[in-house]
Image 1 (cartoon, rainbow, N blue to C red):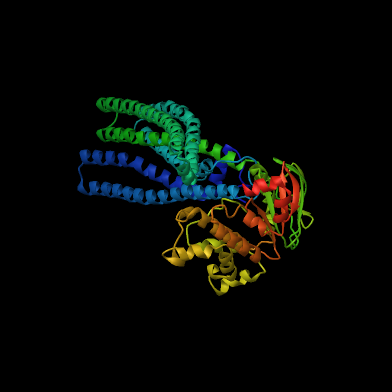
Image 2: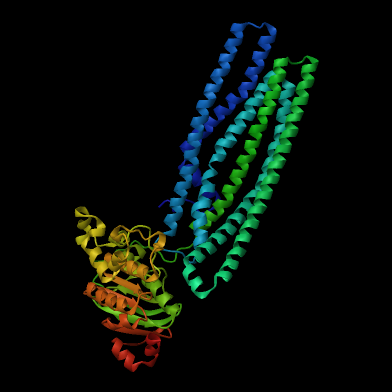
Length: 582
C-alpha cells in the first residue's frame, strides 16, 4: 500500500512526493536550467552584435551573429516545451499518486479511531494533494532560477569583474530576505486549508440533510451555520492573500533596488570607458533579466511553503490511528452462526446473543446509540471493550476486517448510491458476490445488471417498481447520490444492492423507514424469501419487518432483555410493545 511506504510526517510526505516523480523532476530541472542559461546568453549576444556593428559593420559578420541569436531562440523554445512537459508530469503525477494514497487510507477497512468530517477528507484528498504535488515544481523553478543567476553573474564577471562582484554581493542578501519572508506562508497556508475544510464539511452536511432541513423549516439556521463557517474560511484566505501580496511587494522592491544598482554601476563604467557600449547594453540586459529569476526563486520558496503546510495536514490524515487491526487471518467457508459474547462497548453493557445459521433474526432496541454500537461491532469498525464477536466460533477481530467483510456485510441505514441506472447500482454488489457462485460466471455471459441475482434482488426489494415508475424505464439515471429518487426509492435500491451481494451473513439497519406500509410488507416477504437458508440480522423497530423474522431479540439498557417471536414479545413485553408500536 502506497500510504504505508510513506513516512507520516511533513517531511516524509514531501520526500515521498519527490521520490515517486524523481525522473520527471530531474528532467524538468535540467531543461529549465538550460532554458535559463540560454536566456541569460541572449543579452550578451545582443551586446556582441552591437559591438561588432559599431566596430566594423560587416554585413556577413552581423548576419552570423544574428544566426547565433536565432539558434539560441530555437533552443529556448525546445527546452521550454520539454521542461514544461516534465514539470506537469512531476506535479500532476505526484498529486494523483497522493490522492490515491489518501483515498486508500480513507477506504481502508480498518477505519479511523476518531470520526473525520467529510469536508476535511475532501479538502485533504483534493486541495492538499494538489498543493503538495505542485511543490515538486520548486526544484525546477529554483534550479532554473539559480542557474540563471549564476550564468548571469558569470557573464557579468566576464564582461566586468567589478560588475560581477556587485551582482554577487547584492544576490546574497536578496536570497536570504526572500527565504525569511517565505517561511510564515507555510503556517498561514495550513490555517487557511483547515478553515476551507470546515466550510466544505458544513456545506456537505447541509446538502445531505437538505430535505430534512426543509421539512423542519430550519433553512435559516442552516444558512447561519454555513455563513459562519464560510466567513471564517474567507478571513483565513484573505489573511494568506495579504501576506502573499506583501511578500510579492517586498520581492518587487528588492529586485528594483538590485536592478538600479547594476544599471547605475554599468553606466559609470561605460562613461569611464572601462566597458564598451555593447558590454553596457549586455550588463543592463543581464541585470534586467536577473530580476525574473530572483522573482521565480521567491515564487518557488512560496510554493514550497504552501506544500509544507498541506503536507502537515496530509500526514495527519495518514497517521490517524486505525480503529481495528488487520491480522491477515482467514475465515473458513462460513456456515453463518453469529454469536456475541459478553459484549461491553459504548451503550452495550453485557450483550450475549446467538444467531443460528440460516435464520432471519430481528434485533429491536429503542436506544439509537445501542443500535449504532452494535452495527459498528458487526461491521468491525470498532473493537469491543470487552467480549468477542464470533462467526462460526472464530473471533472476527482476530481474523481482521478484510476477511470479516467478505463474510459479513453490514448495510447501514444511509447507504449511498452513485450516478447511473438502478440496475447498475444494484449490480455493483456483484463485487461482493461469492467467487464460486453463479454470479461469478454470469457476467461473462451477459451484463452484470441483467444477472439472475440482480433481477431477484430488485424484485425482493421492490426496486423494480422504481424502474417501472420512471419515464425512461431501465435507461433512466438516478443522479449523484440518487438525488432523482425519493427517500423510499433510494432505500429500496440500496436494499436490493445489499441483497444482490448475497453474503453468508447480512446485517440490515432500518431498511424500510421511508416506504409505505404496503410496500414494506412486500419487501419484508421478499427479503425473507430471498434470504431463506442464509443468516440475516434486521436491526429495526418496524413491526412489519419483525413479524417476518424467525426470532426477535429485544435490547434494553444495553442488554438482551427478551427474545421470542414478534407476536409473543408484543403480548408479553410492554417495553417491547412501546418501542415497536410507537
